[in-house]
Image (cartoon, helix red, strand yellow):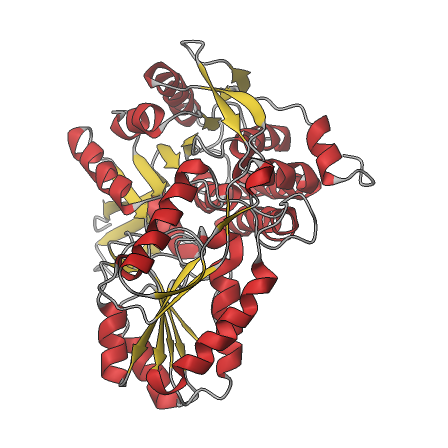
Length: 497
């Protein structure tokens, strides 16, 4: 891509291919049907996308199964798989501008973050699992002298991967990295709202040396392609990231089919607790604003419930609202923009509906208007609700937009009780300079990750996932390898000489 062109010029020069990717080739859907993908930036039509359905999933699964059974990937030594995946990561970085532009056009996030966050994070994930796989050892059980018991991990076979639209590349990489590194074949169903980078990643993986059939991508709708993948009798596991509602369906599909393993990474309503002994509440306010408003609030771990001690709440809210002018929505293809468009009109209507509900239930609203209507895109201001309570819809349900609820508390016990009073348990944050309190509260919070005096600091080396209805299993870290392998015990009887 020409680095001197504006991002708008680069977008106009793009040639987009919405066909599926099966057995190493682009292909139209079996039915020939397509659906139009429009950009949330301005409503422009991007491309016709193959409307994958049962026949397409069948073809992709058959391709993946054949690749697994003949061992073209699974039987390669870990060091050989490592080299291919390292090359895959290098090529992702070399296509940084193209992939970033596809991500921004597809789901509306600012180009500066697609380029500086999403692409490098996806590449690092693939590279990290590549580097890890030839350093993971199997076990020998402590048996008596007359036996040798080997405990080994083996690839599951065909893994179905269903990823969401909010971080399409990163979520794809979190599944692809461990699934491919351990020798599985993959059939991916990207969100119909953001299919373009997944399709391009499959081409790049082939260029890197991944054999045909090992990584297949079938775009389509959840009730067609997604359901067919989850019900397929020749799929050994499903790695799903998305809503808790759909996660329940994944478990149902497993029960109705072959009892395939299902690993769900689902929703969140993460609590951000600010105690009066924290020395810099203004820093806490800046952190929660940047963490919530980043990616337009379309993050499962967004700190949308902010629990603040009553004695500092007014000052805290003033500090948060002072951040809002710096997070106003603007053109996502402008490199200076920090908040872009919501993914589509339906999501915008959902967010605006929650804002209306917050006002109706009596919380004090700052911001919360639709803006940039003249663009043809879907933009909502950053929104802060003060004097919210934990029983309001905006505090109970996942909004998936730039909407914050500030809830006051009086005691540590009340703060913990409010924080845990949710069906979710993805992440939380504790702001306190009392070492005992920080540890005490962190232990009491029912969440997969608890941040202390920060939020969103993260790395591929630590697991990501939640308690309760936020899912099961963990993405990232070596723990993710457990999701895509089966344990086998091989017991050898050693006879006396």
